[in-house]
Length: 515
Image (cartoon, rainbow, N blue to C red):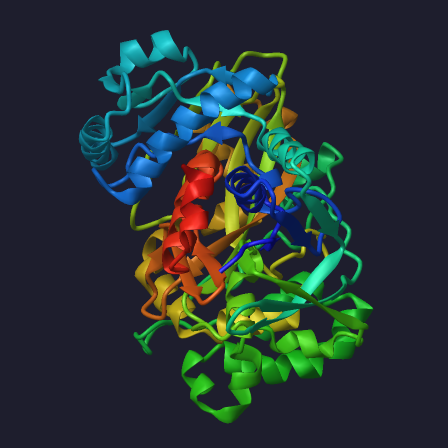
């Protein structure tokens, strides 16, 4: 089996790192990277606080821990050689009570078992020596945690791909994947224009925020804010009311309110998906048929690897794979604080809570000295909607019509409810940050970037936070990535390439190129 034409679908940091790995292993192959966005790292890869994640709480000896360790080992010499900003600034995780202190003890044991260098616990006095403005009862210190620019890193990977003869096809949407015995046919078309990306905006309608002249972001709410899983006695959110609270005065909402009301009956009761009507909105990609038809063309490749992130499940179904794990999109808003005052020297954050997986917050001094707060994370109204005033009915149907979403939400409902106010109020979010960095001046906080995270979830509600790749013939699908995926991009690319080649039962020529 010869490999002369390879397609990588997705120009995020993982897709581009993988294209780079393929060009290194197969220097004579023609490698093409497709993305329907107009530029590199258009989604999650380009919207982060820049933390080089050492995966402190990864299970000892797990593939995720090994990838994080290997990723840093490969990353440091690469950024040094290419002149990419990289600053080893250290990281503190701050416990505010005895429960969090106990979790820090567990994280320390895991980090030590995974040979994360230099990690140790600090008391109040010691933590202030590292970060004078940090406050808490106990801290875990990781002195070698760093920050970098992941967009610049993706661009450097892409320059290597181009230098090796690879090409990038932006503004090109993959609509179908036909797997043949000795080739793969990609159906592609020109992508629809991207929605305009806005800053996160300010979701706070407090009088003091208005007096400072900030814009109020009507979209920054959790959607929905309470959930019903298997417990049918719990409260149920009327999805129509949830949307009306945001957009009720807008003309476009009034025009589609009847449709939303019909959908609401299904969305607010996941059991209704057993009816035939819900399947159309549950099935990945169902809303694609509502788009105006565009001319398609077919291109043939020997090998196709899909790293599509937010569209991973839909393209998997298009290629004949199982629809689980499904992708649920979460919007992550970041804020900027006054960078002239040294409120933090490096990374200061909360203690990870397994019962509340999206509640972590950090204050980060980045490579450009900008001070970033966040993320403030909530269920997204669209997989690729960065604008403040819109949503995608197909994406909402895919999320809220998925049993796994409700089961996952039910498992974290209590802890999520405690943090719900911060998703609708910027001042409440800043107050949460001030618990561990009280020197943050709320009046200086302004909207930063907005990202959308692709979270893979199994049908039983389990969050998938591991590298999961499925293969069939000459097609490989990256279904999920570990939380440290950007940090581990070079190591992840190695692992995926190894798995794809092994799964494809390669001929000796494959091995000779890699030896």
